Amino acid sequence: MSTAAPPQKAPPPRERTGGRLSNGAFALLLTAPGLALFAAIIFYPLLSALFTGFFRQDLRLAGREFVGLDNFAYWLDGDFLTILAQTLVFTVGATLVPFVIGFALALALNTGLKGSGFLRGLFLFPWVIPGVVVSFLWMWIFNANYGVLNGVLMKAGFIAVPAWLGQPGTAMLAVIVTKTWASFPWMMVMLLAGLQTVPRELHEAASMDGAGSIRRFFAVTWPQVRGVASIVLLLEFIWNFQHFDTIYVLTGGGPAGTTETFATAVYQTAFKGFDIGRATALGGLWMLLLLLLVAVYLRITERKGDA
Image 1 (cartoon, rainbow, N blue to C red):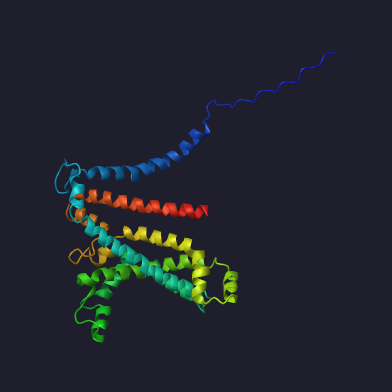
Image 2 (cartoon, one colour):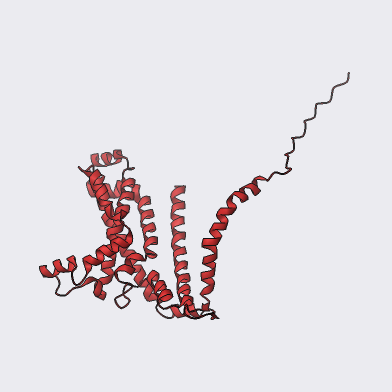
């Protein structure tokens, strides 16, 4: 008795490719306009600027001359460390001071304070004002001739002569105060959002164990919001490291260059000194430092995502 051979499986139908694009080609076609736009407005200008750093180029003269690394050496052998130090002073001050103020206000609003909704909206007011407007407002407040702050301090006997923007010892402080007033609200909002995710049961359990408010903060609150706080601090640090408008409007980098940062130095060199080569060289060094900060930010966010 013969046995029938098992039926063979039919081969899977072939995909009809006539006149059709593969998935990869179709995806590339969809992203091509965005990639072209990115290359046109970001990638090409960036490469062109970095390439210009190897030339001596003056906006007032035609042509340019290849000088190799001379433009970079000009900064590294000159004012680079001074500009870096002043940039760090501004960046650290304009990051930590609003962070402390924003965190304190967030803690206060998180306690269910009466009228907290109104206060939250009131504190957000400086954040919604454009940065240039904020800078002009504080420039009038700090003005040596008719500024409110100088007038009050002189009448109270705290100072004898007008200070702030015209004095090297107080100009950077004035810039940091202005930037603090403009940036503490968003820090407050972000930190308040983090505080509201902390389970109240943890605070209640710590209170039952006899922990006071300070101990509860370090044992319960801070470990829960540490990730949010680190992201807020690093983002604000990166933004302040490249900040321009407040410093330029208030002091322009003065007096005597005591508030000059990378942003103002690049602008002054390019558009007042007309030296595009040296300006782009300093911009390239500045970009390398920013890339290091961005790498740290990405590393922290990656760890936070894996946790």
